[in-house]
Length: 160
Image (cartoon, rainbow, N blue to C red; front, side):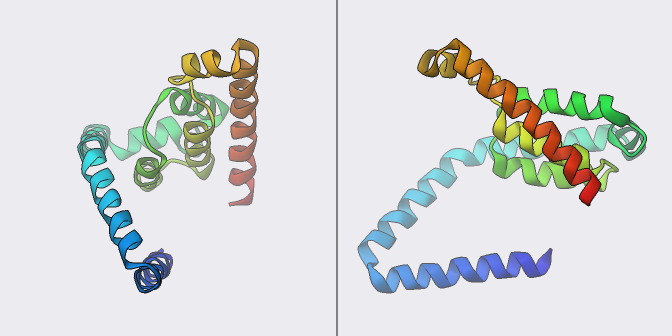
């Protein structure tokens, strides 16, 4: 994990240096936009981190493991799939949350179904999708995405 983080950060730094050397004005403009975006999403990120901390602090790891651990079965997969489908949090936030759940005893299948439904299924954005794509297409896209997310999670659970 640390090696991956070091690689990603080194690659980002090298890319930034290259971009700055190639076009200083555009790089400065991009960094300003990035900083502004970071400032705008920071309250949401902090609120989610506080929520995760409270949730993990109030619910003992044994309870989490019982609900979404090895013995929880397909019901837990479906429960987490539905939760992931309805949550509307950035995928970037879902990774630390999922890591915390894994540390507390969740299975790889649960982690995979949470992340895949969170990113592939959009129940919160369904009204917008219906307006833009039509009812049939929006429901079909979300239904297929839900089924594929579960299949991906089950395959990940078997592989890992």
